[in-house]
Image 1: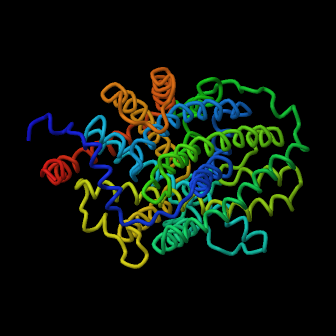
Image 2 (image 1 turned 30 degrees about the vertical axis):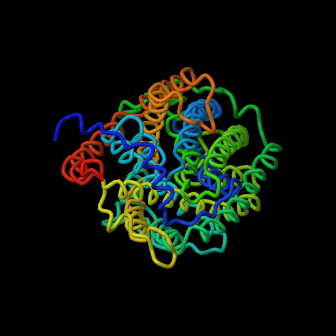
Image 3 (image 1 turned 60 degrees about the vertical axis):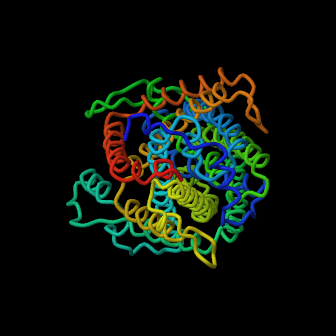
Length: 489
């Protein structure tokens, strides 16, 4: 195979054939798509990562971190919107890249999107387990052995901190079980998943508004001082606080914004994808960015950032000021609401696998197998859910969230580059949504996303490198040979 074949592009006309031959049902309108975006975004940042980002890295300046992450997402989101109007197919950044910058880059992006969605679902599952344990505590159920509630690394660190012996075996069983439940829901079908998601999103948004309105009455301005804590370096050489801490926090909470590109993976199930996908991307992104900034402002104003719990920060903030009844309501909303985030994460991952399998880059008999009754890619859904459940049971939330963020940032930077390439190569292509000032917006998108990637620690970069090498090996060993473009299909 010549070197040039690795950069072969899927003709745009082929995407039209994919649309016409799709076995998936078109049942999603613009508001259901928007709900899918909001369902993925709201929860990941507010209920999960505000504690880690504020407590360990940014302090009250977490608001700046969310704004920076939101700006980077807005640039990428606008590029996504133009692509989604041109190529209304499942697959997200993978599909867009395949039609513009070539097969190898498309595979590489698709491989890193596994970090975005699968590790994202893992992160949320771990946080869900923390809220679930707090929910059990509300009903005085606290007899579950500690070794069933924590991953091995966190259990060992907690044992060292408390001066006790670490358990010989530890697993986050609640995180594993909830992943299985979500997987079952997804196997049953997209319409059922959408209905479930709409209900949960409503509950979750009401909970977020409750946090903002009620929490605002308990803000103490002294908790915002200093707004940007002085920089410190720990024993491992990792920086905390200061400007670098704010940037690191922005890289971490970037994970919380990945919902908008989850919308684009639902194109083959959208009723009017060329109009509804851009609408849902932009509306969900703007709404969620505003809510994130307001919630982070309220939480860091209610309690000192060092007192925010890493696993269940919102509930802990209300408990800290004596609002235990409110904390209980938030715990219930989080237990329900985080399920919708997992639904969208795992749903989007299986749709990307479906698209890659249809292109021959993954075994189609497994990854493109559609259930005869439910009309869902049930085999890949079970696989993704199974892997996610194991990872959730064994991985700390901080490490999972950083891997999610770096995979997401990479994909977003590549999509900003891809939309520039397509505009230059095919300027006359019909674009139902055409972005003004594309060169400026896409360039800023690349700069912002790469900057936030470099704000993450060396260990995260090392894991990304290992993951990327594995992906390249799989591409060369299987995907390049079985690609439909390679076989002339």
